[in-house]
Length: 258
Image (cartoon, rainbow, N blue to C red):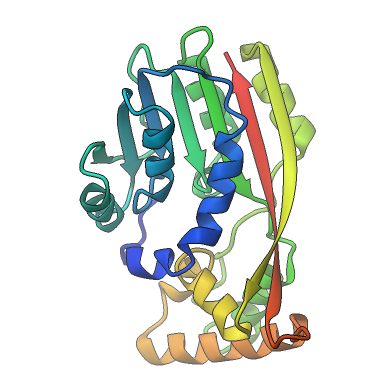
């Protein structure tokens, strides 16, 4: 959720909007709240997850937060009935009476995020819910090849300290959150997204995981990096019988009830 020199691209992000929203739907289905008055969507992006929250609790006050002004502007346009603000989750605190903090694919970008999750959960009232989903794909070919492309190209020096760390263990999350919670549920889902080919995988991550690698590069370097990365993807993700490729995408889900 930290901003880089170049803002996020809502249009590129939404190119795979249905696939990205699927995990938010699966997370929301496990939130044990029949009624909610104050709901916060952290890392709301262009508002696709916020819309799900508004549909489930139409009478609730919905607040969407994102560090990207472009995403907040797009979300405000897409969902005028909700309130959206630019904020940094690392320092943001929920208002008293918040019933749900919902975070879909955002906390993996936050330094020391287990401590942030614990702080947010601890700020909720009794019965409040913290529900988050984190991509757990750093060891997948899609991300291993990002690091490989970065390390082996002429841009290696610019990409020397780029990349996400592997998520903590399930047990580490449980031990951090359970002392603050009545109940903690943690599970994984492995999605297999059907995409048009290696170039589609590159497009998918160009709006998310590739951003830190591309940010320090000039236009010519970016084009070369993406071409190199796509060629490596073609070896790791073979064409299926219908000419498509399957992007395996593991995600970690946590629902904690205060």
